[in-house]
Every structure is written in structure tokens, then in C-alpha cells.
Length: 225
Image (tube, rainbow, N blue to C red; front, side, top):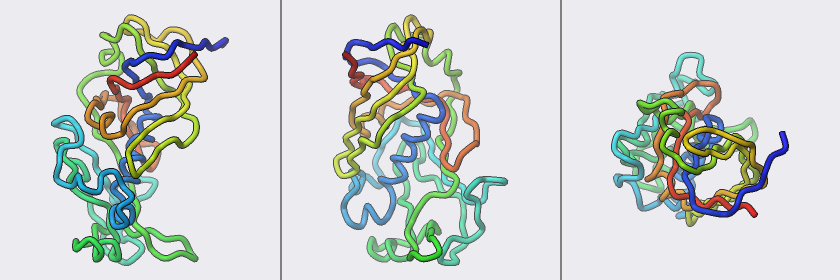
């Protein structure tokens, strides 16, 4: 495909569904009760505060029919139920097991997980970002220059500070359309800023444990040559 390199600049970034799912995975790690209890999450003081635009919803649904991580009870025998961790853009809940709930003075949310030889720890079940109203094409239509991400490389996320920096491949956007492939690109920003700027499209599909539609994020640093 002869991918090109691009000059470094600030530009809108569009994450395809799989790449967008990783952003919701970063949210799940930051609202994990274990990280909050040990004060190693950049969201530790954000419960009840606005993280996303109004109307944004992130739901964890352990009872989703045919969900990859569906379960009637968690690893501690607590009955599971659907939980909106983000409601109307506001961070509404942590993901808690019994131990982290006690540490934080809260009640378990039924999110204990464990392997055969490990003790329980909190984690998500079927987590997803709710879809928005527009198609991905409509969402990109006004982008003069931007980056469409199809693959992310590396794990450049600092969960204490929220700093985000990852390698990426994808396509360059010009005049609202995907044009030529690009590679060896670094995307950098702050997860807090990214969450606040995130706009979801309407193409949500449930294929993985964590799912999201295509999303657009303004103002990221796209590092190239």
C-alpha cells in the first residue's frame, strides 16, 4: 500500500471501532476500584464529575444475551446487574469487588473476577460506549485534515497522570475523506481532554468484551516526520 509519513501537527483524530474500544478499556482501568483505592488512577477524585460531553453513556452489562463476559454472579457470588459507569457524561460509578468497596467505604458493584489461583479483583464484564446519532462519514465530513486510526501500537498510557501516547497506523483524512495510508505516527494527548472531546458515531457493534462505535477526538498531537 506504500504508506506515507505525515508532518507533526495538531489535528482531529478518528478512531475506528476497534481502536475506540481501547479508549473505553483505558476508562475501565482508571475506574477499577483497586486503582482508585491505592490512589494510582488519574480519575480518583472525579466521581460525580463530568468527564464526557452531555449525553455520553458508558454501560457495563454482565447480563447481556450472548455477551462474551456475561455472568449471573461475580467471582464472590454477588448477583450482577447492569451498571452505567458514565451517565449523561458524568462519572457515576467505580468497578468494585467486596475488598475495594470496603476500602472506599462503598458497596460492591458485583464486579469481582478471578483466575483459578488468584484472589478476586474488580474488572468489567460487557462494557460499551453508547452510539451517537451520526454516521462515521458524516462525523468526518468537516475535517479538512485529520488522522483515521485503524491500528494502535504499544501501551503508552500513564494511569496516574492520564498522559496518553501511542503509535498508530491508519489513513490520512483530507476534505472529509480517507485518502492515503500513513504509518509510523504517534498520537499524544491527555485522556481527560480526550474523554471531554470524544464524539461517538452510530456504528456500534458487539463483537468483543469492550465495544465502542467509531469516535472522533479533537485537538490531539499527531507526530510524524
